[in-house]
Image 1: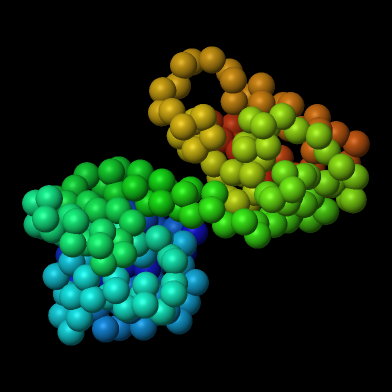
Image 2: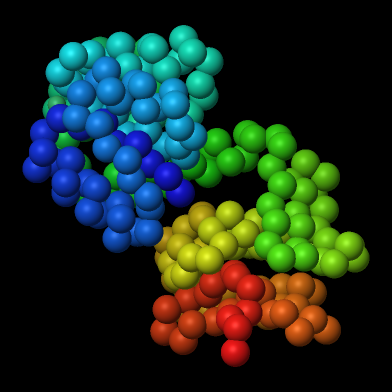
Length: 227
Ligand code: CA
């Protein structure tokens, strides 16, 4: 996932950037609104994190500029001001969500994930591919080597999440939050059970296994390493 961070305060910016990179997000940075708007319109980002008070062009104007150019990139506004009026002005300018400083980093992460999820759901042209495995989100179809695979709704959502994050190690907590939309680990082995369902449908009978377990870390969807 690629994130644009527009924040002028060096300490805050580097704190956020470091935290996001620890989550394996790719981060581009701008320290003023003018450059930030330019980057946002030049590149494809999954989420823009935008401070309100910025040099050259404030966050509201950056937001308006991005929306005027017909970009629908999800925007999360950051600000030290937290009154309802400020919030409404930000949302009116085209921001999708709002976070008041100071915030806890995990709150920022949760908001980013939620925005990314929402935009993923609304994109109607989504096709996800890994090796010979293909998923078409509109048709709700999955094929491996051209052969159709029949999945339940939950299996489909789980595989979609893994495909969107292919190559990345996904923890059980990530899966619970994003596929089951809960952060409570019930202590059950529900995730392992579903991963096994997917394995049987996706990998069984193929030499090139795509679903891998990393003991103590989670799962990763990728092509088998060369031996
Ligand atoms: Ca600022």
